[in-house]
Each structure stands twice: as C-alpha cells, then as structure tokens.
Image (cartoon, rainbow, N blue to C red):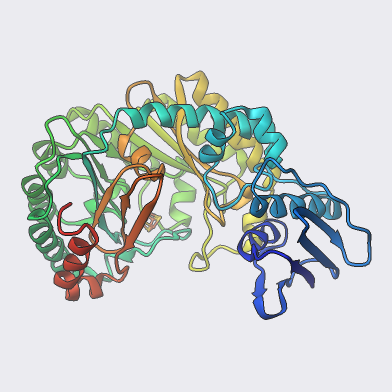
Amino acid sequence: MLKIILQGHENYYGLCDIARIFFGPSKEVREDNMILCQDGPDIEIISRYQNGEVSTFIKGESPVRSGLESIPVKREVKRDLYILLSKITGRSFPWGCLTGIRPTVVANEEGRDPQKMTNDYLVREDKAVIACETAGAENRILEKTDEKQINIYIGVPFCPSRCEYCSFISSDAVKHLSLLEPYEKAVERELELLSEGIRRPVGTLYLGGGTPTVFDDRLFGKFIGTIADRLDPLPGAEFTVEAGRPDTITEYKLDAMKDAGVTRVCINPQTMKTETLTKLNRRHSSEDIIGAYELARKKGFDTINMDLIAGLKYETAEDLLFSVNKLIELGPENITIHTLYKKRRADISREDVLREDGAVDDAVSRSYGMLREAGYFPYYMYRQKDTGYGLENIGFSKKGYECLYNVAMMTDKRDVLSIGAGGVSKRIFENNRFERLPCVKDPIMYINDVDKISERKLDFWERNI
Ligand code: SF4
C-alpha cells in the first residue's frame, strides 16, 4: 500500500486526486497526516512544505526539489507528487497534474499560452493547445451573454430505461410511471412560486435531464407550454430541450417545442452502432436516431446537438470514429464528445474503464481532427474526476451555433437558477466569487417538499432573482 505523508501543508484533497489518477481511490487519514492508497506500491512518500519550499521524495531518500514558484503552493505539491509517481510508474497522463479545476480556467491564467501550460502543469501538448483554443472561444461566447440576465435550468430526472453506463440520478420512467404526473405538477408549482421573484430577463433556458421528452405527448405539451408562459424568455432567447433519447421524440412534442419557442434540440445517440445501443439498454436503433433527427429538421429546428461517448463498454476505438463519421454526414450544428464517466453507481468496472486506454485517447484525438476538418470548432470543455482514460468532454460547434447556456453554466461567471430535482443554482458575486445551492436529488422528496424547496431558493436569491 502506498502511504503519502503530508508535512507542513494540508492539501489532502489535491494529493488524493493525483494518487487517484495513478492508482484509483485513496483514503485520507488526517489525524496521522497521511493518505493511503490501497492499490499503490508498497512505499512511503513525504510531501513537504518547509521554509517556503516544496519537496516530495520517497522516505529514506534525499529530498529533490522539483517544484515551481510561479504556481500556488497547493498546486506545486500536486505537481511534485505527479512527477515522482510518473517516475515510479513510468506513466504520464494527458492532463498532467491538472485536477479539480477546469482546463480552460488554467489556460486563461496562463495567458492562453499552451507551452506555459505544458511546462507548469505537465499537460500534454495537444491538450494544452485545445484548452487554450477553447478558453478563447468560451471568453468570446461569454461576452455575448448579459450578466444582468438569468439563465434557467429545469431538470427532469426520468428516462425510458436506464443506460448501463449512467452516472446520473435518473429514475427509470417505466418503473416510475406513477411519478411523472406528480413530478410535472411539482415543477409547475415551483415555477408558480419562483416566477413571482424573477425580476430579470431570461437570457437562456435549458430543459435537461434525464430525458424531458419522457412525458407522454399530452403531459409534455402541458409542461413545455407552462414553462414558456411562466418564464417568458426574451424574444429569440436560446431555449434548449434535451430530447436525448430518440425513442421519446414524437411529431407532437416537436410541434409543442416549436410553439413554446424552443431554439435548440439535443438528440443524443451516444453511439451510432445499434448493437452497442441494445447492449447498453437504450432500446432504440441508430435508424431511430436518424429518423428523429430528420423529423426535427422537418419541423424547422436549425440548431441540433448530438452527443457521443468515447470509451463505451463493448466498443473499440474504431467504433467511435465510425459514429463520429456518421454524425458528420448528418451535419448537426453541435457535436459533443464525452469520455465515459464512471461513478460508483454505474455498472462498469475499473478494468473496463482502463481497457485499451491508449487506443481511446488516440481515437478521441482523431475524432477532434475529423470534426475540425468538417468545420466544427471546440467551444466549451470540462473534465470530471472519474472521467475514463484521464480525458475530457468537449462541445464542438459550427460557427454561430454555440450553446450560450453551456458556456454560461460551465464558466461559473453567470447566474443560473435551477428548477426541479437534482439541479444546482449558482449565484455570482464580485471578484469571481460564487455560491451554489443544490436541490434534493430524490424526485419523491422534491414532489413532497416543493413549497419549502422554493422558499429556500427565494431566500438564496434574497427573494429577488
Ligand atoms: S439517457 Fe442519460 S440520464 Fe438517461 S439513463 Fe441514459 S445516460 Fe442516464
């Protein structure tokens, strides 16, 4: 078991993140100033901050200083540990010692200079380049959003079946059919209570999930109509609906979306291989995806997003490239490439996630190249702690079709009001300070407590959103 002893600093969280990249989960033992990593080598490492200097070394060996004074100490201790563990294991990772912070935030801090990012955080060159480019795009898009406006997220945590890899709290609608109507009513109630306090123009609206189109035609029509009436977004405001699963998209729902002023629709295949979709419990084929896409086009939606996931169980790297190619042929305005995200809840083992990691890394890079050639550019990005292969998620867009909500939400620079179970409201203050207010994730608790939840939200916004 690997032991990391902290001396003169307390960055347990950051060092655990670095140990996790190499060996999986670790455990903090604060009373002994120690981090234990079950799957690490049988050695003790000292991470020391003393007399203004950082040093990291194997116990019994002489301290070698490899840190950088140009970065904050809490990041320097991570950098040092990363270098030592790389030497010990012979492994390095695409994002180097960058953890717990969005790559584009660091890219901006580093003056959007890829070389500096590589030097300071040991980020691989191609990743540093794409982070700096995406940071520039995020900055430009953010300027198009008005900080006086409010961005609103409405969550529907139900899906027609649970995908095998799902890491969200999303209830299988088939097993929870009886909850759909009460949930819809509860969201309507929250809208009624909160809309009194909404004094600011609604700049962007995002109806996400789960799968909001899981409601039947009648209920969906009522739901989306109420949202549009209550929130009254600015004319032409971006309004996205995640109609993620093509098996839930109907002509009636698309018409209802058009009537409500929806401007952007997400039809998310995740893969264009029907065999994989079946194995993942998605209950629709790649033909269904194409059918839903064509129907949305016929109804006049001119901004369509499609998500793919790299590193899916049952898939090879070539399968990802096949799906990217299929989407490029279809030509949606946005294509988002996610890398498989693993949480404890998901039914996928660490071995699966680590499977052929070099091949997935390479296929992801190749898919970026294909998208660029087809006229897409990266416009927002994020990483999650347990993203497989140490990679990232990147939204690509054709010029002029970028999703403002995604950038507003990701950059922590715009207010977001979240309605429904499981979302997080975010209030931005001066000097880049922000506060979050998470909502209960359990739909039953949400349905039962919606009045109290709405009160809490109004208090969070000091009753004036
Ligand atoms: S569609 Fe998304 S939220 Fe729903 S079960 Fe699948 S992965 Fe989870």
